[in-house]
Amino acid sequence: MGGGQKGGRGISSGQGANGVTGWKGRLSALLTSGKFPHACILSGGTPSLRREAALYIAAFLNCPDQGEKPCGLCPACAQVAQGNHPNVHLLAPERDSLKIEQIRGMRERLQQRPFQPGAQVAILEDGHKLTEAAASALLKILEEPPPDTYILILAPQAPNILPTLRSRCGEIYLGIVHGVRERAQAYWEGILEGDLLTLFDRLLPQMEKEEAIYDLLLSWEEFCCEGLKQGLAHGEKERGQYFLEIFRALERTRKALRYNANLRLALEALLWGVYILREEKGVKVNS
View 1 (cartoon, rainbow, N blue to C red):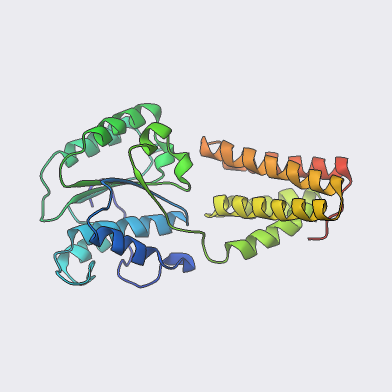
View 2 (tube, one colour; view 1 turned 90 degrees about the vertical axis):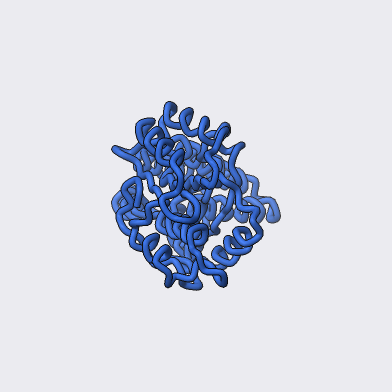
């Protein structure tokens, strides 16, 4: 596949990866309506889910079947799934960033006519890792997109994308990964009650490996809101203030990650901040 695709995954099953359901139906309806935006941000879910959704769109736009699209059986669908369709170009970060040379190369390919019937589709993995120069180059493409071209920008959250780019894109949220709330609850108990050894030797390494870290942060913010409401309802001001401070720490962590902060350092700061806050407030919380 143009741009260095490393091989695809199945694109015709009825349910998305990691248990997220419904996104294929929504995408199919939007694509069938003819109103799918030529530049679109795909957010939510895990990196593998966002890639699967992007490949589903690419297959739909290049499948010649007159019935259900993508059919999953024609040569075009097979090429997309195998990662070698000439109309589909995937860009992945090089040394942790998407560089201007990659965007320029993509622009040259998109300015050519499609090699096969269908549409050219550019997929930018980790679009939030565009360098400033690369983002400027991409903006020029979005302002004057070549005909029969679609640009899909993948990111954990739409706000991760620069506002100048985001304003020129449609947005599709794929949803929270199935089971993330249960994992968030298990982490939450450790965050609120764990000692330093638990926080940094057990929880931190596990959290670093989470593909759905943004969804976990959002779930923890929901737990904070619940704790705040309970504190206010029972007249426990200290408890309410405690959860409010944690909520603010979670917001700061999400903002830091939005601007490409080091994941481990951001999580270390979060855990350390919650631990210090807990010790200072002396709040005992039964999760």
